[in-house]
Every structure is written in C-alpha cells, then in structure tokens.
Image (cartoon, rainbow, N blue to C red; front, side, top):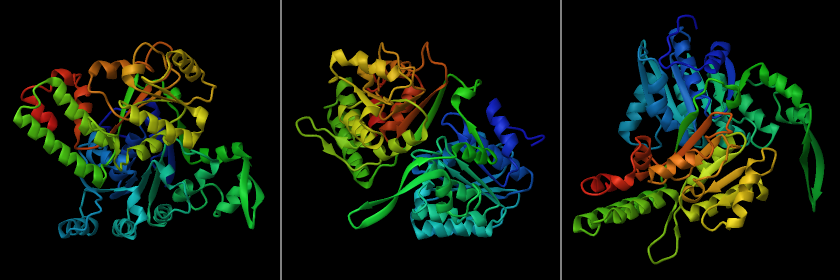
Amino acid sequence: MRGYDYKTTPYDHQRSVLEDSWAAKHYALFMEMGTGKTKVAIDNMAVLFEAGKITAVLVVAPKGVYDNWAKSEIQTHLPDRIERHVMRWRPVKTQAYENELRDFILNEMPLTLKIFVMNVEAFSTPRGAGIAKAFLKYNSDNMVIVDESTTIKNRKAARTKNIVALRDMSKYRRILTGSPVTKSPMDLYAQCEMLHDRALGFNSFFAFQARYAVVQRRTMGHRSFQQITGYRRLDELGEKLDTFSNRILKEDCLDLPAKVYVRRNVELTPEQAKLYKQMKKLALAKLESGELATTQSVLTQIMRLQQICCGFLQPDDGEIEPVPNNRMNELIDVVDEVQGKAIIWASYTHDIQQIAAALRDRFGPESVATYYGATPQEERQEIVTRFQDKAGPLRFFVGQPRTGGYGITLTAANTVIYYSNSYDLEIRLQSEDRAHRIGQTSSVTYIDLVSPDTIDEKILQALRDKISLANEVLGDKARDWLS
C-alpha cells in the first residue's frame, strides 16, 4: 500500500478498509450501498497489480450493475497510469466476438491489467461458466470479485455452484454486498464458501446449519422435512465473520457527502425493445407531420416511451397493456441490498400498485404503504407518522412524487429509489428533499433505475444537468428527445 497514488480521493472509511484487506487472499466487503465498496475493490485490484501479484481480474455482478463496472466505475477509479484491457461479457456467439474473446483470454499482455466483467446470470449457462474458467486458467495470477454476492446465496442454484467452483482457480477473492443477510443467517454460507471452503469453520452446509439454526422435523401428509424455527450462537458467527470481513454502515461514515447517487441499469426485454422502437418511429412520424406542435404533445410521446421502459403502455382510449419487463425484479434486488426504511418514487399509478403488491408479497402486508392521488386525505398524515416511527413495521413508502414530493418529512429513510423519473425538475428536487432535510442524521443514497439507450437516460441526464424538460422539448430539440 505504501506509495499507492489514488486516482479519486478515498473517504476515511474506504482507506481504512483497503489498508486492512488489500493483501488478504479472501475478504468480504460488507459495505452498505452508498459507502463506496466498488471503489475499494478497484483500488484493491490496482494495488495488487502494481505489487506484481495479479495480472487479471474477473468481476461478476448482476445485470443491473455489471455495465457500470465496464463503462463507468473502472474508468473513474482505476489510476490512468495502469494500462488496462477491459472486456465485457456478451451472450452473443458471433464469430467476431468469439475471436475477440479468445484473443483476450489467451494472449499475453505484458504490463497490462486484464479485466473481464461478466453478469452473474451468465453462470446459469455452461458456456458462461466455461469461459470464466478458461479466463482464470490461462491467467492464473488473478483476482475474482463477486459484486452483490447475495445473488449467490442460494447454494442449490446452478450459478452459485459454478461461481463457487472458481474458488480453487483464483489467487485472490472478494465478495461485495451491503446486506449479506437478506432473509436468514443461512444466506451467508454459500457467499462465504466462495471465499474459502472453511471460511465459517465448516465444509458442510448441514453442519453449519446445525450449529447456528434451530431445526425441527415437520410432517405434512406423507412428506417429512426439516424446518428452521430459529437461530442461535449468532454472536459466535459474527466473530467468525469479523476475521475476514469489514462491515460498514452509512451511519458510521461521518465523512460521506450529504447525497450519494447510484444508477442501476435495467435491460429492456425483447418485447419492450420491439414496442419501444415502434413507438419511437410513430412519434417521429407525428413530429414530421406537424401533429406534435405543442410542448404537451411532445411530453405525451416521451411519457409513452417511458411507460414502455417501466413495463406497460396505456393508450388514450384503452386498457393498460402490460409488457414483459425486468424492472420489478431489479427493484426487488435493490431493496434486498439496502438497510432500513426506503422511499420508492414512481410516476405512474399502475407502477405504484404493482410495486406495493410485490413488496407486500415479499416482506408482509404491514411493510408497505402507498401515497398517491387515490390515497384518502385523512390517511395521509397517519402514513407519514407510521413511516417516521423507526421501530414500526412500515418499511417502504411507495409514492407518486407529484403527490408526496411536497411538504412532508420522511427522514426515517436514508435510501430513496426512483422506479421512474418525472421530467419536471422541481418535482425531482422536492421529492429528493423529503428524506434530506432537518432531522436527517445520515447521508442519503438516491438510486435510479434506468434502461440504457432509452428516454430514461435522457430524462436522468436532464435532471442531473438541472434542466426542466418542459422548457426543452419544443422546436428542434423535440427530435433529439424522441430519436
């Protein structure tokens, strides 16, 4: 670590974690979302490369995250002095890509750090798992990073088995997640098994379960099974984790900025992509014919493109048409990773209802409240009061920013998720400040769900640039927004 020159200045907690862990063969970064675990991992690979310990890194991350590694995070945090060749996994099998992949894996690249970024879903396939193994085999001075490692908590899943199988082919291993236990302490076993076969002191899940879970045999009809009814010795389990992990919570990071912004990518399904292309073509045709002559008419077309990104379409005179999409699954993945209470903003009533139903199904009926136009006036303050009770069961405030984005205080949450964004800058700023105001004692993390190369990106960029679309989309700029 001595003499390592950071590209981006670390916060104190990031520097401390890196100094504690950089040389460890295996380590877990249990750092809450918004505390910068990705930067720590990238600095770790840089330190090891400059120390002559590694020449290659395999990064495994969920679909909504792995593009950020390849296109943004590495470029932002890896020092420019380090020559690098970053390869992004794609499921296509074109001859050109196959040749590029083969050359990347097999060719020696002196004084260059090879970084192969794969999505965790690829490990559900023999091809994805096989290529990852080939990369590690031919680049043996390597490091494997599994980001959002709760994606491998299911020890029976094919992708978990295939990723754990990489352990013995890797020289250094890191797992990253803000919430290592989403449902049960048993979630830890497979994640830690990726680090070392006896990281938790057991090379058998059933021995681990017997030590830390209370299990009773149940019978239903002719079927008999073991059911976990409680947990024990969790202090002992925590002490074991402390030997190879670092737990960082936002409330412990006094030097974090007041607001932290995170983007999660959501790929369009084939059905969405087809419909989006058709709708965009129709909107441009209307623009050419002069039908879109007002700001409102252009914004209506933008709204329809955004609806498709969210997974539905509502014609002027018809029923809502659902469209197969990945957005709800990505939202569930995000809330599994965050700690404590969260605000979820969505622009459309249909989405609010769907989100509330999905969260109630997963976390229970008392965990969710909705706050939008249809919420009775006499219930609104009671919802806010229950949400502000930090010991209460209401964990998720699902609201429409045009309705709930003004005048209320929601400082019990330090995570705010935008399922979809309004094109109105004032609404975005007001809704952000429901959590970030007097009474908030922690940094607030804002997470935007975004479908790449769609209107989602354009809206978010406009908001980041402090531009209100209502003043931007008329005249020549209408074509830029719709094309």
